[in-house]
Image (tube, rainbow, N blue to C red; front, side, top):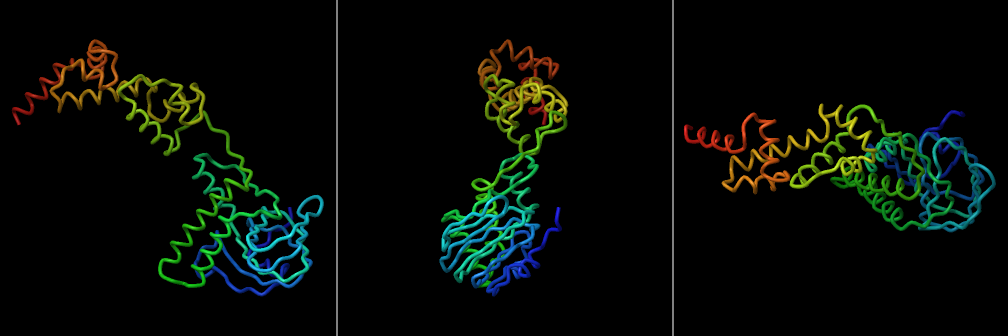
Length: 300
């Protein structure tokens, strides 16, 4: 593979008048620059970053070749061209134009994809699009330019928020993403563990199936059960029963309702089921546990 050029090297191959640079913002992984270009015929080596060209002023016929045949279309304000990283490109246009460049690092795109889709990204490629009319990107471009040009307080925070919004939008609409295969071994991702625990808490009053829990993580039941045991040190069924017993304990400590009602509130089939499981976990019956709590409270 040819050596990849950096943001700073690009003007050597696409010379123009630079009118704005977001370098002052200090966000190297999502850089913005505005150029004014005369009619040109250029070849650009493969870049280390993903590149978006957002047309701000002027209308021209644009010819571009990345791989394969040349593509041709008319571009002007409101149009965006996409160029994936690590691909050389040739460009030819006949009229003056002003454009914004977005240079987005692969590390930022990989992290954003993993966070947005809650799966580890393996690779990302932008679609080869010479012309896309996208009002959202035009609006983000205008807001970013305003923040960089004004240099007002909080500009970096606003810029960061816009960069994140743009990255997610691009990944959703204009990217091909390959994700790493989910591993059947090892622990859950923290986000998945929180979803699993929240789901169990919210549904503790009823029977929760292994299939329901596996669907949360897009796993097969067998994969889920294996990962669950590694992560929590017990089978899913045992974990759910333990949480049901803990819920029953909470009710026994603070409520004076009948045991059969506590059984239903905690997700047991009936009072007999509660008594059996509770004794297995606590070595006492629910009634004995309640009596012990009352005695301890009285003594205190």
